[in-house]
Amino acid sequence: MAKAMLFLSTIIWGSSFFILKNTLDEMPLYFILSIRFLVGALLLFLVGCKNWKKLNKKYLWAGGITGVFLALAYITQTIGLQYTTPSKNAFLTTFYCILVPFFCWGVTKKAPDKFNLVAAVVCLTGIGLVSLGSDDIGFNFMGDGMTLICGIFYALQIVAVELWGKDMDVILYTAFQFFAAFIICFAGFLLFEEAPASISLSAIGSLAYVSVFATTLAFLLMNVGVKYASASSSSLILSCEAVFGVLFSILFYPDEHITPRIVCGFVVMFIGIVINETKLSFLRKEKVKV
Image (tube, rainbow, N blue to C red; front, side):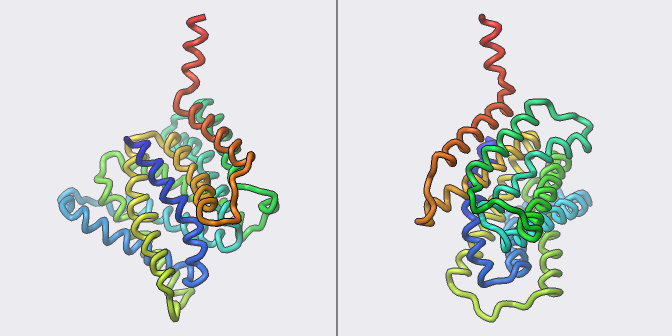
């Protein structure tokens, strides 16, 4: 059930890439993120009001630290999206699936096994086949560099949830993450931006979607999933958001088409997930039978 929640969150996030790209044309970065995290925090505080009796200092500091990682991840990813393609942004973000096993190793002293490492590399290869085309060759710091940095912060956020989320109420923990992220983003808005003079109905609809679904619901599902699954497995499943990002682009943009390269990428990613989840135990069983 936990892994199904993780997959559902990746589908929601995958649908948000092209929606957010269009929204950035009308609204500034910190304004969008402030609204997203404020809506998410308020909704979850309302939903979790019955659990306030569980509140203690750990929710404040753990939620605050995790929220800082979350805010920095979103800020750097959204800056990157302004200077690179949605597909490349989605691909480079999944750099975290390589980092999470090593960050967990540093925190828990439990080394990743060879299957975790091989699976991460295989999945990253598959994501590259799906996401990247000839137009995505090349590197620029503001687009690609900032997106890679966001992968570091996403990895830290996943590890933080793995480390602190086990014995906390997920709704309250997520709400405090959002509130901490809102404070950072709202400060950025006050310092660097002005409110948009006008906002179209389509932009309002897009902002509502990414606030309620791609922020509140998706992160709640992710935090529940990471709580009950390992961080390494969670990061690989979550990396599928790049694949769903491409699929939604194909569905909603007439210029996007399924190609043999994309199909190969799906197959390679599936192989990577199988390696991680099974440790190829079915092959060892076959050898024993022989």
